[in-house]
Image (cartoon, rainbow, N blue to C red; front, side, top):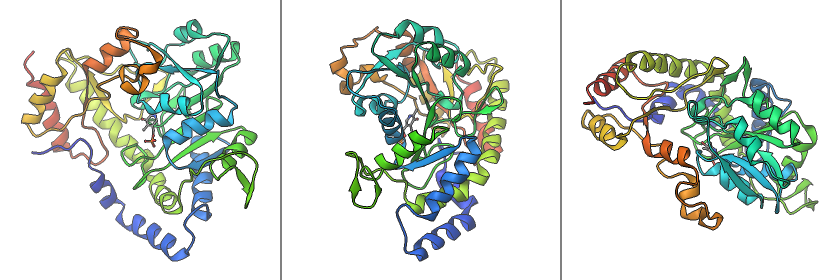
Amino acid sequence: MRVPFLDLGLASQELQAEISAALTRVVGSGWYVLGPEVEGFEREFAEYVGARHCVGLGNGLDAVHLALRAAGIGPGDEVIVPGNTFIATWLGVSYAGATPVPVEPDPRTYNLDPERIAAAVTARTRAVVPVHLYGQPAEMDAILEVARAHELFVLEDAAQAHGARYRGRRVGAIGDAAAWSFYPGKNLGALGDGGAVTTDDGELADRLRRLRNYGSRVKYVHEVMGFNSRLDELQAALLRAKLPHLDEWNERRRRIAALYLRELAATGLLLPHVPSCAEPVWHLFVVRTERPEELQRHLERSGIATLIHYPIPPHRQDAYRHLHLPEQTLPMSEAIHREVLSLPIGPQMSPDQVAAVVDAVQTFPR
Ligand SMILES: *Cc1c(COP(=O)(O)O)cnc(C)c1O
């Protein structure tokens, strides 16, 4: 049996009728950028998240970048970010002109550790970007408390956590704003690139609408030097077709995760830890071992695809050499990056495929 890491083709097949209808509607409308589909999706996604506003953007990286920019963050400012995250979190800070200041995670959840945020605050710190990594909500109450004490803007990076809940509330409406990605492989994914920011702050949303469209609110009147970063009509229509299925698809991921947690408990692998305040959506199911490459090869021999999220932490990438954060600056983040392996998990996995993964992991020699 072959088990792909994630089968996006099957997901599209499952919604073929809805996807065809969305495509036909947009193609026939003759209107392809910033129109009724984007407005409709913004309204529906804001409602889903429980935020007042949603602004559709070109991708998740732009969502991080433009949200910070709209909050007035720029050159000379420091923004606290997780040491272990996908590099886009850092790049968004850098594109705004600010400096990413990484902190080590909570060793059990791999998410931002509120106490370390307080320790990293300087006179220049203006914002903090908690990432709901792998689909598990960060410890938002404690993060907000530190942030309020230091007057920091809180931008949730929710790119991996569509539908996740923290203390019963959906992520994306807990901080001052949240950045979303609709990259195809995310829990809510378009058939191309897409992104958004959700927020309760009407003025912030207004500035984002201006920034995404050449700094313009009225055609050919440019108030600021903006960008071109718009969610397009086709992707918005596809996202509207998929959004009603998100909860069901997340539920399928939960069932697979519950099975993995139960069946792999005795394997000696370090399994994900879910605190009682968190309802994760299992964007990834990440196990930890001192021999990730061996486990990867072992599973490969059974036809099971795995990935490493992520092999090199941002501070060890050449792209961030100028920050002079050498090896062992963030030992915990580095250890996580060295030891993690993501097992296949996705709404379209068959019970046989899930069983094959369990069998193969259980036979990994200790
Ligand atoms: C995917 C992702 C992004 C960036 O999203 P794109 O749409 O690919 O630009 C940002 N942050 C995190 C944590 C992500 O996983």
